[in-house]
Length: 119
Image (cartoon, rainbow, N blue to C red; front, side, top):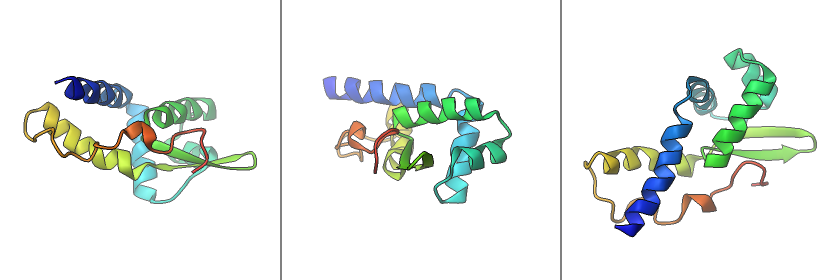
């Protein structure tokens, strides 16, 4: 049960992060474009201020939904496929529709590349 509690703590941060509609829109833009994007490109797509988008990108990166590559002063954001591949299964486990054993999060999500780290 302790392992499940630790997993539940990670999942709770995922669900809290998705509690903001702007972050969902940003994730959708990055997922549907299928490529890395700069903050400016994301701003153009979502119609929010650059500072607001940067704030949301940091939160999404800190949780592990996004990864960032730095190229000089530019940052290129993209979906962290490993984290997102775990999310549907996590929702199924929380709702009692899938077993917690042998799930894709056997390796801690925190080990995935995160915002601020070069991938």
